[in-house]
Amino acid sequence: MKYRNIIDMHTHSDNSFDGHHSCILLCEGALDNGGRGLAITDHCDIDGKNYDFRAFVLNQYTQSFAAKKAFEGRLLVMQGLELGQGIYEKEKSLDIINSFDYDIILGSIHNLKDTPDFYYLNYDENDVDDLLRRYFEAVLELCEWNETDSLAHLTYPLRYIVGRAKKSVDLSRYSELTDAIFESLIKNKKALEVNVSELDRAYGLPMPEKSLIKRYKELGGEYITVGSDSHYYSKICLNIDRGYDLIKECGFEHFTIFKNREPMNITIE
Image 1 (tube, rainbow, N blue to C red):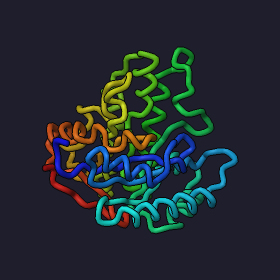
Image 2: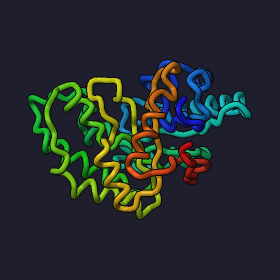
Image 3: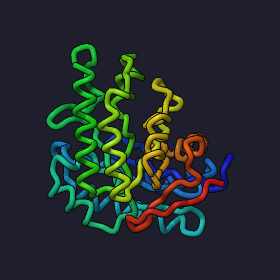
């Protein structure tokens, strides 16, 4: 690895509905790929149907805690969740994130309220501008709610709008909203995530892309996490070094991890 401290802050075990491998295997994958640490942040989509949240959080926390203990001294293991659409059911969301002593809660929006995940939408039949404007408004509400620690994959819909449907998008059309999102993160001392999952896929860009990361820095952004969003043990920590390259180009000399929901900046070296 190009850098000494490779720490992946966004990973999924088989406790996620779309995960494939155990927490233990994720840790093995991190070590195999030269990592020094990882956060296990399984999907907890609050608007999921017929979902036993109590069983999920108990199983996920227990298994990630067992992995943390098993790899103690060899690998930094942080326990977390990716809370999807938390603003749609705030009371239930707070019950979940306060149920255990997590290290990090990622906040994300995968779909508009009462609407399928952006993965499932047909972008020839939908108004892309309207979808994106409503998406960024939901993300802003999530940030202003101020109950999560790092904002995951800010430009998530572009994975499908640009990467799959090949529609062009001018992000400057939403600059007022993205600036407000960054200002909320900065005011509340929260982090922006740089998600590197698409670097070797059709979309080909980090989420968010470089211009938005630079804007976050210009506005005073201090905390920035980097995550692979991997759902396979063999891909844990991959492309994190490319994420570090990118944030250095945008003016950051550090990346951020979380312990007990508190940010800690680590020098990129």
